[in-house]
Length: 280
Length: 238
Image (tube, rainbow over all chains, first blue to last red; front, side, top):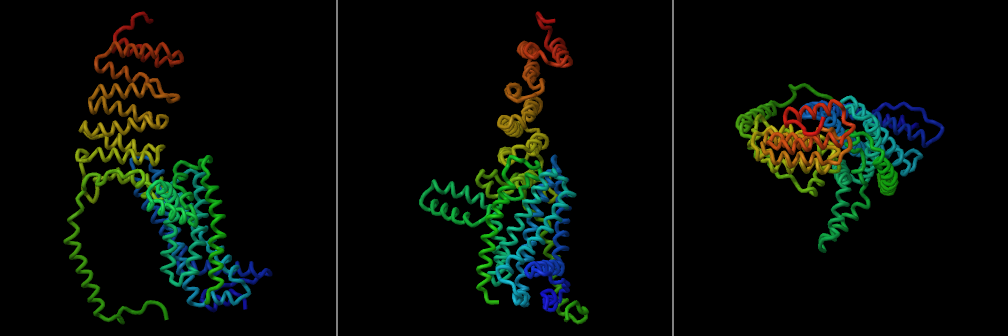
């Protein structure tokens, strides 16, 4: 039985897809199709754009009261607001989606097909990343309409935001797969996100602590240990790109790309290892 | 089966609870909507740079804009309007300096300080503004030299402290910034003329004429006219 038909039977979601010759790519496309349909079912593509449009309206209202530099105000407010909405929206959607799929046996059903658990994690993650990029694209369009930031800065910000969202989606996938509760997974993911946005500060604190007393030095070592495995999300999607445009002298986007490439194998590997030994 | 059934199937006691809750909430609102938090002018002193780092959660620009808008609307909250004379300008200046460090390129905070908070009639308050603008333009002359010129205006016409205005005018004239307009070098002469030091003012303007051969004819004419009409004739010049 094709995986789409099986999923349609199991979930009540209609999924029509012909199996392609390559088994993994067909499974991947079917999973992507399935993810998109479940996102539509969960009103993700309705709720997020509506929330972002409301944020844009609020931004226009707030920035309209600024003494000067109203465009800059709108760009930075909407940039930060849409980032929070996209990340929070995707985290909550993924955590509850995974829990629902686990409880209803959809994941077990998918794994009854000839696909390894590692490949499942990879394909599942890729499908979610594509959805995240769609959400970022909506945010970029709204940002352009709302604040007309410099085009170069907007494109770099959008690319960096797509990387940040991808990274957080895969991290959420990891927490969603290893933790038994959707609420716990969502809280863990959001806590991780907050920590990752603060990771630059952790480095500064660690530097300061190294010159203090015994306790400070121990804390400093602790900060360094944490910062080893926490990505530097403070280097991603910086609002100043939306205000002053892309400054080519800054290594921002390169850092974002390198950080993403470095962290994705780590989080996917961890998710694959834990998921491989999980009893469904 | 999923979906919504008829409301008639819901037990009436639930509606009673709902209405009681609505009534209680309205009673609470009636008692609580009048008292508001008293606005203690700029509640907090500006935090240290380290604490500001923690507050801005790695989005400097958002933190800058949000705090700047907060400063613009400080005191005017929930229908209350606070006169400028009631503000603690020492604290305000601390916030201005902190935010200008977060984004030294933006004109928002100096404009807020100069054009909005600079409307105070209290000279003591204005001195905080002048000090902030002076320090900002000294630190970032290329971007913010205009605010030094504005602080000369504040000192000269609003604080009416001519010695402070003269000091600021000399600082403005001495700025090492490319393509500064000629009037920035003339500024000390204007202040000196105001306080009756016409000889010194004339010396400055004559020096500008002598050392600026590329000066536009209109500028030269203005300086000569100013000297003739405000400072007296120049001996030995045409």
